[in-house]
Amino acid sequence: MIEQIVFYLFSGLLLLSASMVVVMRNPIHSALFLVLSFFASAAIWLLLQAEFLAITLVLVYVGAVMVLFLFVVMMLDINLVKVREGFARFLPVGITVAVLMVVAMGLVVGSDYFLSDTYMAIKSVGPDYSNTKELGMTLYTEYLYQFEIAGAILLVAIIAAISLSMSKSKVNKSISPEDQVFVKKADRLRVVKMQSEQKTKSGGSEA
Image (cartoon, rainbow, N blue to C red; front, side, top):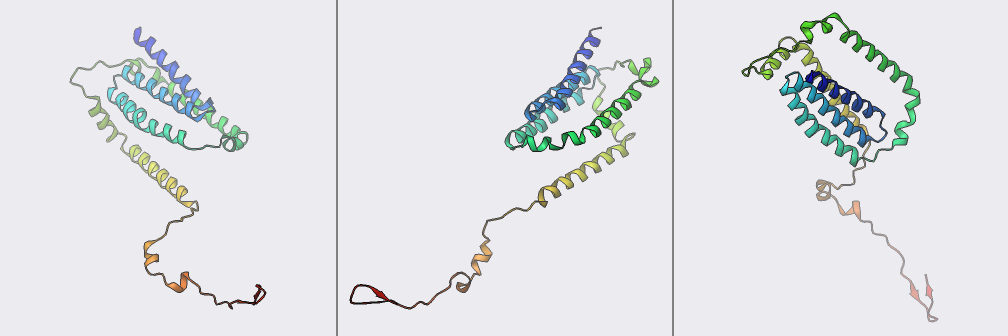
């Protein structure tokens, strides 16, 4: 009974914080609510006896990735007016994708397999059980191809991000030392000959 209460408590907190990530207008507040979502997910994983996943989520995502993301958001000068220009144009597409995701999750969660007593029951394991070993065996045997596909998608995303960042024209004002060594006087200095002026008796000048 207590586990169910704790589960529903953190589940509600997770849904609320995840919704606030999308709804909040300030990107810093969205990042902070995303941190809260990670903490709620870690608590749910602890209830499922997945301690390794919970600790990894807190240490890696909250302790490293989200802190770095928060600093980047705080240091960047984001023009929110320019970002929101295409919001109304892409709103129908976003609503359609959100509805499809909700329907897909409802079909998965509402299936007979997830509602069966065998799936809902949490197996009690002994102190010698290692969920890290079990996770590694499952990940690299049953879900090996899915794991490799996810890695390939992340590699394509990294390459795309690097290409987009390097495609912008940048003005480089630094001077190359090699060009300075081989420079010639004629390339930098031009001597112009001009007629000298002669002073007249009246104190004026005559060209």
